[in-house]
Length: 246
Image (cartoon, rainbow, N blue to C red):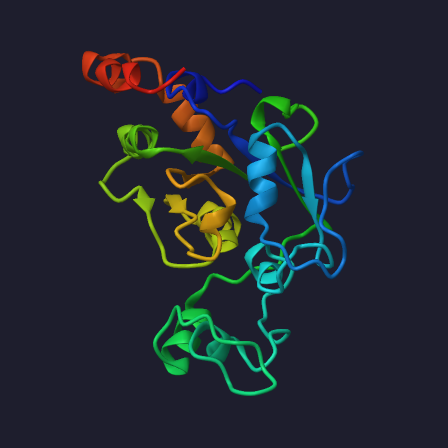
């Protein structure tokens, strides 16, 4: 499936389809069981042409079990998620990440996340142009983009929809913003795109100028259809496009 958006925005990274599946693709790259790597590293690999797969046992860090929808509980986090996100619980427990000031605020954050359990055994990520929509249907599409390209994606997400809040930038882990929160948005009457990978722990997994922009698949198809006749064919965008390297 070719992306007109990717062509118009001169994306350096290929848009990535996130697919829920019960079968593991042949020759897909995958973390070893017990490996504690960040899932965003494999999303980046997919944007460069690889096919990656995750299961509840091979999803890297324990938090990704929630972020990729393999569980709707943080019970597996030693010492409690509220201590891990704040300043830790003390000796014998993981060091706190200090992303949230107090355990109470961290618990409130965890409780408001749109937790979900996906209906399949695997999450597959692969370049959108390698997807055969007659055989598989993506749940979401993830763009890896730089500021000029992000600006265009935000404008395009609002181009054919009422209101000015069709894109959100929520606080959360990298996997929250490329999977969990966009998946919840896909269930909404008015789904919104999600800008992500603002998670400090996930930032080393992408180029310093790159953020993610994730949309439910139906929203992606609508944005693709909206390219003709939009600002992407006007002189102001051409000025910006000309400064994006080929």
